[in-house]
Amino acid sequence: MGSTGIIHSIETCGTVDGPGIRFVIFTKGCPLRCLYCHNADCRHTENGKSMSVDELILEIEKYQSYFKFSGGGVTVTGGEPLMQPEFVKEIFQRCRLLGIHTALDTSGYVHLNVAKSVLEYTDLVLLDIKSFDPKIYQKVTNVSLEPTLNFARYLNEIHKPTWIRFVLVPDLTDPIDNVTGLAEFIEPFDNVERVEVLPFHKMGEYKWQQLGYDYQLKTTEPPSDELLERTINIFKSHNLIVQ
Image (cartoon, rainbow, N blue to C red; front, side, top):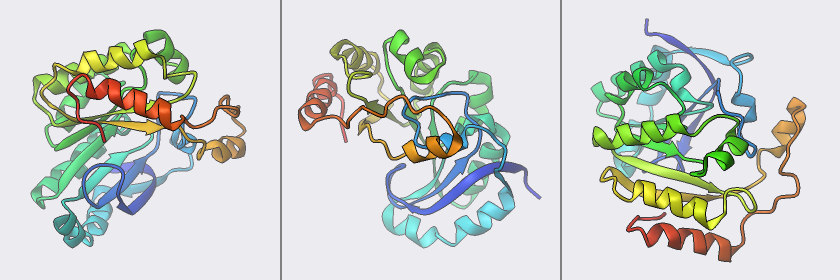
């Protein structure tokens, strides 16, 4: 019997969390309190579903033909998967034995020693860097930026394929200096395969209301096409591939 973890849900044919068709596992528990979080119901481990690695692998195996056909695989996201490192590591170990591609979607807000053994079995990291200005980062997430930058540097050191994700929120994460700072930080890294600029949306607002949380971005609109293009062009001007 493999180890057991607390998950929120599973998506069997995801197409936005890594390459190809993905089997996406949403874990419970997160140390960040992002203002725009669309999985606010993953913050705490209460009311989660306990699942063993064995149970998950039985499900995952059913989708192997989809993975092979599309170049897909398994993505663990959350919440913050690295709050359950042993569980995630074992899922990825088992996937590797089956020849299934693994992706870890993380904020990088973690002690490196906790992450290292998981990363050994991770094929791709989707690293959310929510801001480069430490003050904006603190405002967006309620935690400090430095652990995430350390995590990013370590991924480059070990040559771990990485996609950087940046959520563009008008009047919050959009200052030119903030975007330029992030672009300059990741430009020298040879492990970064692409940057994903994700336009802010309010799809999670209803969850906040259901949970009784105060959603502070009620009046924030998605970014305009012009703002999105300007932001993408900043990354491109630093020799980064943007999707």
